Every structure is written in C-alpha cells, then in structure tokens.
Image 1 (cartoon, rainbow, N blue to C red):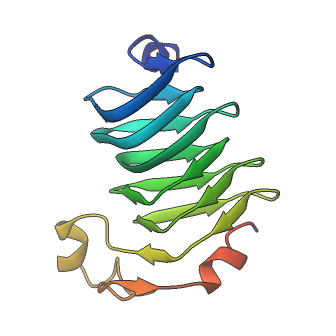
Image 2: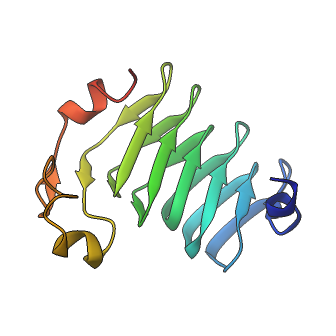
Length: 141
C-alpha cells in the first residue's frame, strides 16, 4: 500500500474548502469540505477528523468521520467504526462496521454492464435499482 499512499492527495485537519473538488487520484480528507467531490476512478477516504458537507462521487468511498451528503460509488462504500453519515448511498457494495451511524436510504446496484449480461452474478440481487434496508442490519457478520 505505500505506493498508493505516495499517489494520494491529502486535505489536512486545518484546511477548509468550499466549492467543487475534482480529481483523478486518491484523496484523503481530514479537514472541512463543503460543496461537491468528484473522483470518478479513484478512492475517497473521509478521515476521522473530517467534517464533509457535500455530495460525493468516487469509485470507492471509505468514511471514518462525519459526512452530510449523498454518496454515489461505482464500487464499494465502507462505513467504518466512528463514521457518521447522513445521506443516501448508491453503490455496488456496502460494508457497515459496528459503531458506525447511518441515516438515509441505500440503493445497491450492479457494478458494471458486464455483470448485467451474466445472470449468475446477479442471481442473489435483482439487477434493477432496489433499496434493501435489510442489507444494513446483516452487513456486519
């Protein structure tokens, strides 16, 4: 993982950003961000000290701090212990650890169009948009 850390951008604890954040590399936020965050093919990590008021879009999103806004991820969303999320989640996969707080709706969707053409991959989940609130309670096994 050190190679991934070397190519990650970072917003420190004392940094405040209001507006639009876009990029094509992994981003770690530990400060205050308000607005929108778009990292189409990258990983967004909202650190334990972060306070984010934004709609976020990225490949993978890991939340350890506070996020008020909607999440749109083409891959995985992880709500780690200590996370506080108020907003809706749209993602292919979702993981919620104990002691994470979440208030909103979940829309689990097929990750790519190749999965839609393979019925075996989607057999346990319908390929159409579906809110599955039961997924929240069974996510931590």
